[in-house]
Image (cartoon, rainbow, N blue to C red; front, side):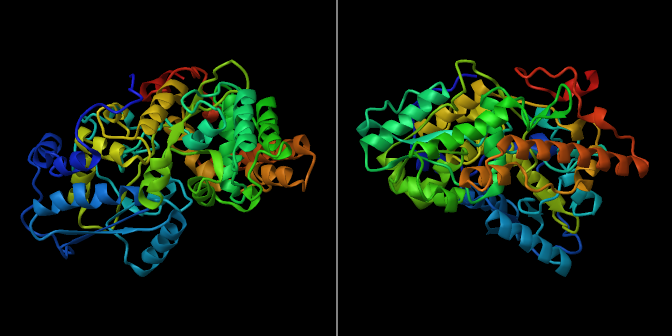
Length: 493
């Protein structure tokens, strides 16, 4: 798929969203369910209100105006009440709601910190596949065992693509141009990228680069992407099942990040910033380049639209050298789950069916949060040119990797059994950047050894419970880093 870096002539974003309001709802539901109508008799427990909780603030208009409103209009007596919270608050609220018997009907699992299979085993959710034929829909090839389907039953569907990463360099085009840096030309190598950031630092009143270091979890994932750009296959090499934390790419990635600090290019407040703090500083014009996820434009449109008007561009993630290593990531996860206690499983499944259709996928694209699972819908959606450019980079750079849960569902029990190891990759990076440790290789080796030992212990513990699981479940001998690992590939491993 080729996506134009410039939007096509056509209606404005507001016009697009307005014209998409009905979303051909009846047609979508008829295609998926055979009739598109909910039962006429109200089941016991229904009170006329479907409660929906999530953390997707940039999608507020898309959800409330373009999805819930039209659906409720076609279902007399139904009201959909949405509650939006930050991910940590959402996880806490869900725990409280479960203890008090006040769970929402539909919610994301953000902030819960447990794999979906573990939550299903604890009876958090109910399946949706019996209400809608998702397998025959356009997203059918994106459904995976152990990710969306458990014990043969479908519990959730991906609304967003797995073909993304969280390290897109977002560039303040105004600052770049002041410094003589072409904002439309992505630096290809680490050296070129660092030089561009240095030119912004030297040629403007801003700092060239920011790395929010307060959040160890953010650093953990971010370092992984930079290591992949240097050739690492990921935190695990799926062809062998081996952890990669002591490999040269991980060492080089952390050293690369430290070089911005050593050279005075990095914003001096980086150690005290979280990702949203860094975005706010970038939006205020204090920073030229911020590497973060796809959702930055959607968030800026809500909170700091003036920064978008000033100018923003998306660069491709730079590589250590001229070799363009492919980045890998597992398939798109399920975003929304139906509470086991909800009497609205039919309605919830129908809403998810609409969300997976091409028309609402284009609406999701226009909200410019995570790219939609049907990436081709971005091409015709009213999105900012930088967002379209970013998605084009994703299609070129990212491939779908295997996940152990799809090969053997019992592996989730191993993951759940494993204790957290500290210091982890993010915490080691924090310590090294702060100067609290200068033995980077020794710290990574200790982490590698501890992770191996803990995984082996967890495998033995789960196997002792009667599960057929072993280290071989982390090995995919037919994995090709440069190709997507499809649902059919699991049978040939």
